[in-house]
Image 1 (tube, rainbow, N blue to C red):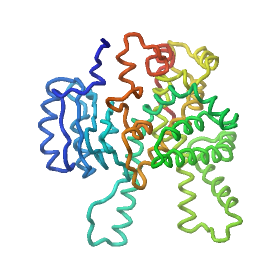
Image 2: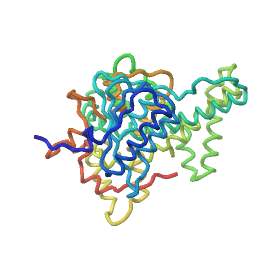
Image 3: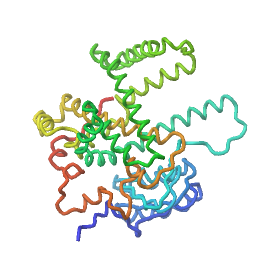
Length: 395
């Protein structure tokens, strides 16, 4: 019998139920239950979910009750389980779990943040609401990306060995690893949701073009800080004007400026976005999937265990892992737009959940509960984790 790891197993005795609409009434109901469970110890908490969603403010309150550090300055591990519906803010709650599980018949539904019924809207209030929605959408996409990126890295490590076969079958020897990974996901998703990967890889390719034509040239100037950012913005204007020179309808009006700012934020998000904070932890868990053996050996030679990572090591980590982190973040940005109903299997392959209950799909629980893990790229490799300690990404 394999050992049972409580970090990956739902526990009914330490659980709460998010059933029905997520609102103030549910918060009032759950608050004493959560506080009582937390007072009884720091072990994992399980959240069973069967909800179509509700108020984002109420969701934030529930999340705060679950995750705020206790008297011992520890955040409990949260295991979320979708046993029925997990829509809107309930889907967000599910995916923000430290370990998320979906039952085979669960219904998972993502969309962008929205207001409820609004009356007496003025131009000024509409503008304010639009700005608030945009900001909250980005914040939520970043939070979800932090959880989803690690799940996608698990898939990436497992599927890496198939990348060369994909290149051969596609007659694309120059395909990047990210493109091969996107191809794998595309084949595994249902036709209803494969457009999410198409959108994410399209954004990644466009970003690569901008980085090559703009960021690389600015980096060669040696500029830093605000001067670096200002030069990127200046060159980006030139790039956009050149790109649209044959389009006589295009202008630097509201639409044109919006395109320009979107491209600038795209570059900025890749370079210093919150998802880049994940690069070191991803490398610690799955380093052998992002470096060839010789590359990894050379990287480890650059590091001395008694010293913090050098900027050279950090740069190599960023170059290897950041493109993957950005692709994963792009998936979550796509999920935060339009309407995205997901089957549990699609949610698994997109990184919304870790485990599809009662199936043979691989998951971290299986690795954690093996007596002698034989898959070093699935989060069980101690050598890489010890050799490359975490460091803060540049800001």
